[in-house]
Length: 193
Image (cartoon, rainbow, N blue to C red; front, side, top):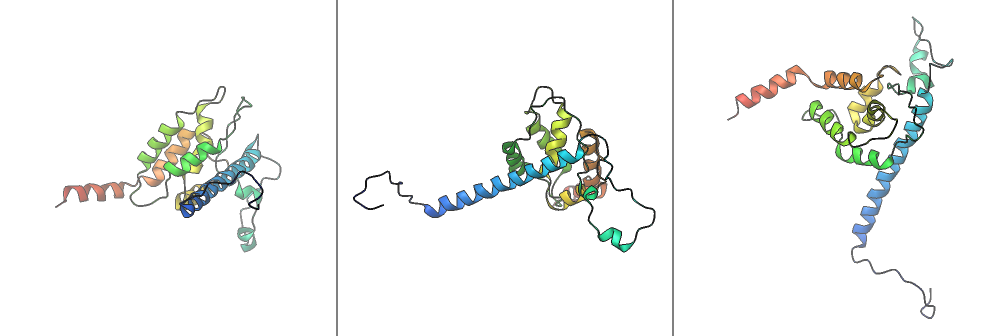
């Protein structure tokens, strides 16, 4: 635009680097949420109804090729999502972004599974959708709170093996609540000097 042309100019941004950095972080978060939502929609399409004809039947003896061949049935979610009678149930990207930013479990030494489940419940209990059971909402959103080793461990479970949130929470707590870890922490507290 030349000086002789009049038009709306953008105001001068005194902290351009900070603005660009914030924009970049917002873009990354939005892309991660969109990717997670797309993956959820793929899993939702795969998990509808009864097992399909193309589900893999595992033979008794496996060749090396069997273990190295990727199959669509092996990539499905371990969670079998319940049928929801309401047709207005959509996974919100804003809720996914909120969960990814505040309630994340990475299977680190200092993380407590009980605290993670409590924080997850505090956030998810605020979401109510008519005709959608709380169990369905919890099963949809919980995988988004896992990262790293915890996410990989969840993905190793057989497809469709988790059917209720109580089952999922029990398996999660059993896996990450180690009595030896608690004994070490208790010993450390009693011998604090």
